[in-house]
Length: 318
Image (cartoon, rainbow, N blue to C red; front, top):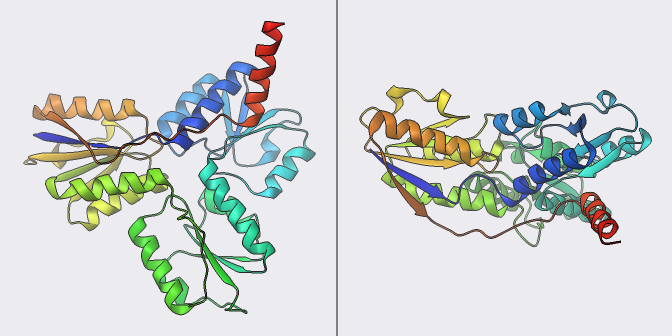
């Protein structure tokens, strides 16, 4: 068996920043430390932090007044920020800057009087946070059919935004439907779908013709990981999304000469290595790294943590 190891894969800059933020917060403040929703959508990452004393919550009422609360990479609404301040919580904002970009675009379009059509998945943490920026002005669509059913009062003042982790193909179809139905619709100056989502999809799109089976590492509630599996499947290749090697089933790979292995933007490299070890042990697989695009993006830690680190360094020097 030949394993095509896709690159880029795994952690993106936003996920790296969020994980480093929680690591640093635990170092600085100790535990328990609270996190609003999962820090990233990955079971291995969440379980690791739970073992260290992090407590993941879905409601602010679960956080004691005055405690430390970290906002996840997916972002939160202004209402959550307001309620956090009222509970006197020390907050650390680990929102991915690319998600923040979409929030700022929503605020801008809303102030200019636009009705905003948000292309995304209902219930996803990122979508909830973005819609919270202008709840009276944002309409969510998930499909081309939703576009046909939209009711907009002023079709001359309509804009669209997208969730950052969508399938490029699916988002393109929905945006195309929006432009067809609303010729005057405007959008962001730069595509909202994040660089990492695009790059990982490009790698799968490029390499899937060579594969008999595609293995995507990531959790079931990870949007960008699900899109990778769907993309491979839409090309007619059997595709599986798993958390780790313990989920693999021997019969998936019987008769397969080549397996494409990739990972969603919130999946740690350790689970990739475990799956490759399984394929080497069970099928004498050889590994062939395949780089489709290089990545060199990084994001700084949240300002709240940088200020504390700066003050500590200044105190040491003094």
